[in-house]
Length: 290
Image 1 (tube, rainbow, N blue to C red):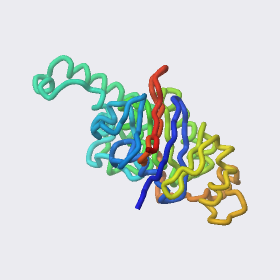
Image 2 (cartoon, rainbow, N blue to C red; image 1 turned 45 degrees about the horizontal axis):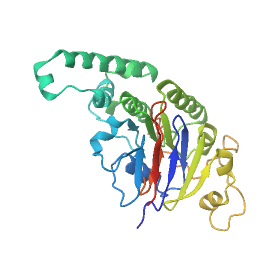
Image 3 (tube, helix red, strand yellow; image 1 turned 180 degrees about the vertical axis):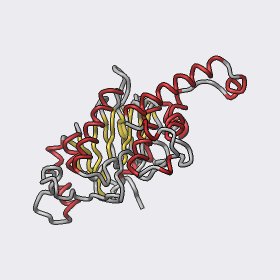
Image 4 (cartoon, one colour; image 1 turned 135 degrees about the vertical axis):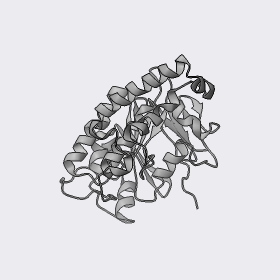
């Protein structure tokens, strides 16, 4: 079985890029390849002009790649603030010995991490629950905690896996504004996996569509909306009409929507995607097929 087959694309620095496709099309697998959870058998994945394939998983966050997950991946018995501080660890340079001796570097880094955590708690309106254990919170609040933890690592490239699952239309509008604010405030490039087509088409600079592990469309939202292969992927072989990918009435369900029971406010590829999230003047990222 091939999960991803010759997928190749580039995400430019500062873009919000939507990644769509029916269930099982390879979207989360692609995320897992980029973040080094999975190892691809061939191809390349480059970030800021450097290959990720030789990097250990633990180095991904330090390189500037952050992500959220479709299924929560928090330390559930730790508090909100403690989870966010964990996300800052990749930016700390003190060693085990430094901590054992409580050297000045340790105190400086801990103070800086605390300030960053406090800023993210304010930014994502988590102040009222910052000292609460994560497992006592609602699913939607936990997703915000996971987003805060991802941002704590100061990512240049942020992977969001289905952040709008289960949200109502006003909450989706708020999420759209939040993602744009994150891109502008933190100078972060965003790759967004989402089934909520209205959100994807309204927020994305570019959209990439997958089906059965292959890229079937890559272009502006308007171009992808009318692409015949996208229509076939969502409506079936021989479909003659174009699916409503973000242009229908708000009450209409989006194609392929997979909503969990509670709001999801947070969170692939043998060939190398360009994950262009570098600092100004730096090259972006690239995923390409061999």
